[in-house]
Length: 283
Image 1 (tube, rainbow, N blue to C red):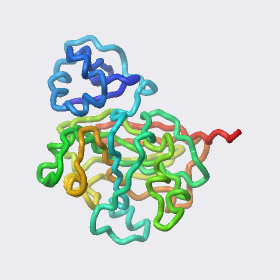
Image 2 (cartoon, rainbow, N blue to C red):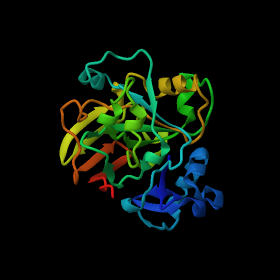
Image 3 (cartoon, one colour):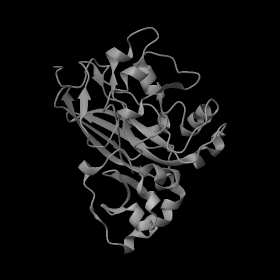
Image 4 (cartoon, rainbow, N blue to C red):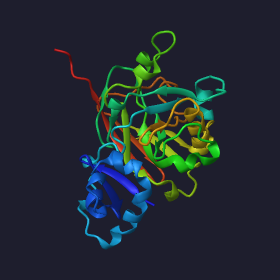
């Protein structure tokens, strides 16, 4: 088991609420880079097991945490992947995963501000998968062995931009800077009682908006990895936003406002707390 953090740009492991610099704890300077740690995730279990006997750098301070996978080559996202979300969207269940991408520059840490691009910005709490072992044509039966770990994400979405044009511009509406908070930690798959059944929730301004479990996914993690790898080579460090459950703002005509706090949580992983701020006025 391990909990991988990005503490001010350096890879770290969390133990008992404290963080240990990974390069120092492992004796390997090359593991200072969080992306190197993701690619070498199999080595982290032994380092994590040694931390009880080490003096930590300090207590984990959420404001110092960056995205636990900061520079993925590819950021996939799956639309309409919960049965309840498809129902609230009045859409049929998709026959194959509905895939779009988010630009990696949208990623921020677990307490970063979300800069609102307009009046129709929405929330979407999601389980996020980080690939640790790349490959092509990965069978679903072997897919979990290619996963470095799981984290929590918000697929923040400007619905007006997303739905403009024919066909809609999903990637554009979901890739504004700050529209991809992830964290607080990348957690090893063996830390979960059942990685196919993870509880998720999202509160906005103190009101519970989303609450579900990933066992409601239409295409679970193994099937999603199998599908994506049938089309392109997955690489260590790629991440997948696996979809959001029902309860998004668009379905209720309620969008994010300046000053509101988005609080997101996932069992075992932890929480995100992202304050919404208005975009600076041009000029």
